[in-house]
Image (cartoon, rainbow, N blue to C red):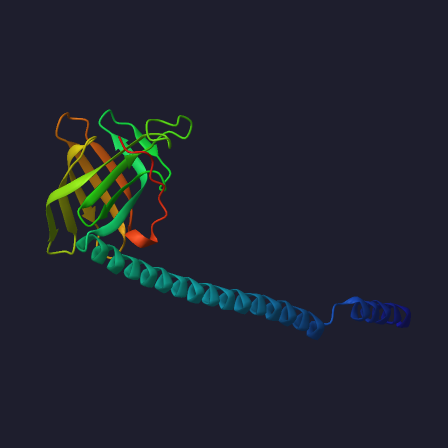
Length: 209
């Protein structure tokens, strides 16, 4: 009986030595939980900083757009601007991304220049890939709608051009579009781009017809 009891005590002692310590297990769990919480807190902090930077960037963009819009509307109203085009569309449905330095409509006082140069390979009649025409403007009209959208229209007549031009401005930005209606044919052309003050433009004017 004593031998059985002794054997039982040895087994119990062995189990006690090999069993994991409950306090150690709790400590490990708490350590893992603490690390997980630290990671979560760091992620939340990073996201808060990202949102703050994004909000700041958004406000800066809005301020920049607002300033550009004020300058654009004033320049058009004063007939002292350039519409620098990024795209040119033709009646056949072709839509071409173009160089804004060689595709534009400029107005300086009573003189207007319309230059369409969609080609980057051929020099064209104007030497910069297309056609440049200039002339004197008349019948100009500047209108602002209830929601702030503005339209500036005029006729331009010269040796190589006789057309009606309409320019549409979007409030809060200097983005604009234009439609050119030739008086001698139906080859309407559409431009999309940005309005900048004449003195701020860096367009390259080719040889006029």
